[in-house]
Image (tube, rainbow, N blue to C red; front, top):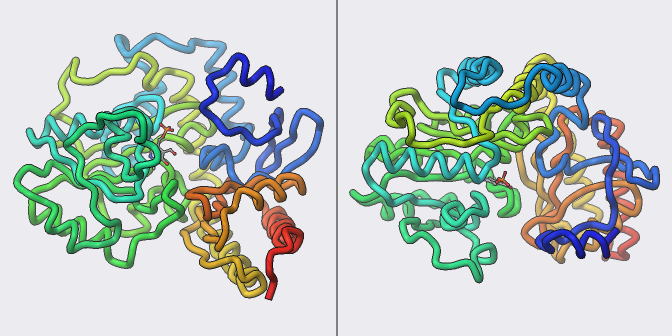
Length: 390
Ligand SMILES: Cc1ncc(COP(=O)(O)O)c(C=O)c1O
């Protein structure tokens, strides 16, 4: 598997040595039939679980009718999805694309056209994508090394430091762009009141406030969007990952008065908002609403954090537990890739981000008994690693 993968595919991924071939809710199986509890959800994508029957049915029915026509024609599933997003967000208008990076690219273009300014302030330790512009927005040097020059119109300030942001905003600033919780940066939750202060500062300086909800969106943090959890309304926000229930789709959502700056021809995507993707997304959103996954993520997330705090008392290499809903990070004293390997061997999929943070991003439909089993495995793994228990 490894040899063929490396022979035919660009070697841009450091793969774990398994191939998953089937999934159901929070369970997945590899090609040898081994079962795993999935606490990674394809990197915060499978919020409704693997192969949710309603998403599968919607895609199947749509695929038999028509899959793609381009945005040259009206796309009925796109209108239905945009209406649903409008209703659950309280009035935002959508531009559809295929990924998180593309959604952020669209936001950056809109911000520049609307404000007629180019400078955007982002946070250190942030992640906004891998295209050159979104890499420029990203506040982590390790992703940019070897790919310069970056776009120069991005400034980076310390996440959570409102004074630093205040002094960074100038007459040339078009927007502030942040993640409501930094995901790839190691599940970093902003200090209380920070996002509200950013909103106030943006209002005072007539600067646009953009939130990147690519990882936090769609019930992950205990609210449909994390900005609802923190009680702040951005001017623009971007989504992708969980929107399609496993099917690729992204969107940039803006208040209509801002979105209307975009005119025909200003931005486009061949595949953006096509029939299959929008049908999948509408079905996934309906599942999130019907199954009240925001509430479920809030409740199960609280339980997970409590149980991890108990593990922290036992295992001294756990430094801190943080997060909201089912987006939880466990900061370790040591690099955590070995813990991920040991857990996988015992049937648990977790992820290590920012070198030392074990990240839990399970499907929001995960059952409590599955979470309990995941925690049992984690406890065994920390013991097995012989890692100094108190
Ligand atoms: C906050 C955030 N923004 C943007 C992206 C990029 O999304 P994509 O990989 O779909 O381009 C990611 C991906 O992890 C992300 O976490």
